Every structure is written in C-alpha cells, then in structure tokens.
Image (cartoon, rainbow over the protein chains, first blue to last red):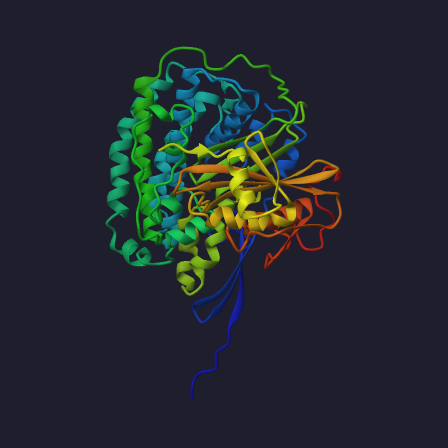
Length: 368
Length: 147
C-alpha cells in the first residue's frame, strides 16, 4: 500500500529566515518539494517616501542610508544625482571621483556580504563569512575616516560630498588595496572551485534571461542570466565615463552564476578604485548650492544608478517647496524579488534559503 | 552604447496611429495617455519592433489632490532607449487603471504597492492586495490627505 501524503503549508519567518532581514515566506511543500510560494514582507516598512515629503532635500540623505543599509554610499549617490538633475547643478570633478571611489568600495563591501551570507546559507558555518567580513571591515574603517560613520554614512550631498578625504585616508586606502589582493585570493581559493558549492548551486533555480527582463530584474542577478546591462556603462554618471571596466556576465542564470558574477564584479570595482586614485585631482568637493533647496515648481527627475543590487532610482517631483512633493524609490531588491516564486517552485526545501541568498535582497530596501 | 530617451513628441505619432484616441498630449519629453488605454498603449510599446520596450523600470503614483498621476518609466534593452509615459486619473474615489501585469510581470509588486499606499486599483491584476501594510489597514498613507 502506498504511503498517504498531503501537502503541508509552512511559515518561514517573519524572523530572519536567513540573515537578509525580516522576511516571511509562506511555502507549501509536498515532502521536500516546493509546490507554492508566497513572499510576505513589509515588516520593515518605515514609510520612507512619506517621511521624505516632510524633510528638506539635504535632510533626506540620511533617510537613504537606511534603505539598503549595507550599500548606503550608493543610495546617497542615487538620491544626490536625482536632486542635482532637479536643480540643474554641475558637481565638481573631485567630488565625482570621491563618489565613484566610495560607491565602488561600497559595492565591494555589499558583494562581500552577499557572497558571505550566500555561503552561510549553504551551511558553511562561519568560515567564509568571516573571511568576507574581514575585508568588509577594512572598507568600513575607510568610510569612518571619510565621514565618521561606518554604515549610515550620509557622506554625499546634493552638489558633491560633505568632507574631503583626510590626508591619512590615501595611505590607508593603498594599504587596503595591497592587502586586498592576497586576502581576496584566499577567499576565492576557498570558495570558487569548491566542489560542495558547485554541486549544491550549479543548475539550481534557473532564471532564463527573457523571464528576468520581464520580471524587471536588474543588477548581478540579471547579468547572471546573460545580459550585460549595467547603468554605469549605459548612462554613465559621476566619473564612470572615465573608468575602464568589464561587465562580468554568465549565461546559466542559476544560483552559482549569481554568486560567481558578484565575485567577479568585486575585481572590477577594485580596478575602478585604482583608476580613481590615479585620476583624482585637488579641487572643490561641493558645488555652491544653498542648504535649503527650492527647485522649480513642476520640475521632476529620475536619478538612477547601478547599485549593488541592481537599478536604484529616485523619482522626485517638486512643487517649488523645500521638500519634494513626491519621492519615489525604485528599489532593485523589491523588483528582483518578483522572481522568487519562479525560482523556488519545483525545487527542494534545502535549496530554498540558498536561492534567496543568491538573489541578495536587502529588506531595508524592499520594505522602505 | 549609451541610452537615449525617446521624447513624448517622438512617440506620440506612432502610438496614436497604433492605438486610436489614446494620446492626450506630449510635453517635456513625456507622453500623456488616456487612463483607459494605458494597457493598450503599453502593449503596443512593448510589442512594436522599433520601440521594443521590454523592461519596465518603475511605476510611480503622485497625488495632486484633484487628480492622481501614474508614471511609467520604460527601457528597451535591445534598442537602448527609454521613455516616460504618464496617465491622469481625476477625482479621489474608485480610481481604476488597467493593469500591465500581463505585459511585464515586474508590475506585480509595484501595482500592489500603489494600491496599498495610494489607493489606485488595477483591473486585471490577479493578486491585488496590500503589500507593505496588513489587510484591514484603514486608508492609503501616501495620499496627501492621510495625515
């Protein structure tokens, strides 16, 4: 006689199901096979867009830190670009380089977390995560030298950046880059050719390119499916028009490819940091803009960047007042999450958290 | 290859030829269309081989008190151009817009979010329920009169 089975619905979360934020998955299983998935979120919803309507343009920079909080430099950058488009101000060269440099360091820090937690989700308890954190820590130390903060940096301002780098920043950055080469190689050797990582992630949770585009997926997750779309190349901002870099892509769109693309992007980011150091010249770091900005009534801007998770954009509408009339955040993590149902259904319980890790979402940005 | 923005003026002729009575105006690089025709216009802009808007960047809603504006930012990853399409919904009650979910699955969460926070519903969306707030929440907090 066959064993009687029936589907079972399980709630995963709303605590941290992995370590990516407060997120809940309602999953129906048949044994270990996933039949249905419903993502439920909003636990971290702070009404950022509504809060922005009550603050002036400069104050909102601090709100953007708290979106994707492991990538706050890039959030600052996207927001400042939107405001600069709104008021039509040109950013000084030195500020453009400082922004590009910090944004790329931030991307490295964010990808290191993405990689580290992805491996943690695979069950490698601690070791690779600590290797990744060792390097990330150094980047946060550099940020601390720049602006006094490590996570919620608020380093950029409409018109430029708030502080110039102190004198001891440059030697510290050089030392970091020296150590980076050996320490990152150690991490790569540990994980890239690792048989367990390969077997667990190759060919799992495939995302075909057509589907990725239709689901508005962007960033490394899109490039792992075969597209070379990167806003740093397609619509260069700040100093990216003077940067030489490649766009790593993969074609499989599986968990391994999403993980691999991030590992390769770190090399390109470091390459850009080195170019920034070579090209940056002394000069002003902030355009002469008033502290309280009043853009033209009816002016609007869509400031977009290639953030570490994908396309991050701020859609700002002005009514002539000191606060934006509307400040909408186009969040890459939220959009990438659209695919979660496709990625999980048909796969097994043991792959679920790994797949979620491979998307590298940040709930601060999903919920806003 | 850098991305170009197709202005509303450039789009207007082609869109109004393909979808009659859909274009209201084109100004400041933006194409304004009739709310009832938004899904038809979006469908044309996606399927037309020269426009080929295969990527939906974002959908935003703005509350202007007497009316709401819904803004679509689109990109063609094959043709390397972008466009902005807007539509206007008069009044504050029973606002309904045709969904573009069936064209771009990426509209799923964004239309749910606009329903949740702005109170505009989308006909044809298969799962239109609150997304950030919980079912049973009273009101739509991104509206200007929610204080």
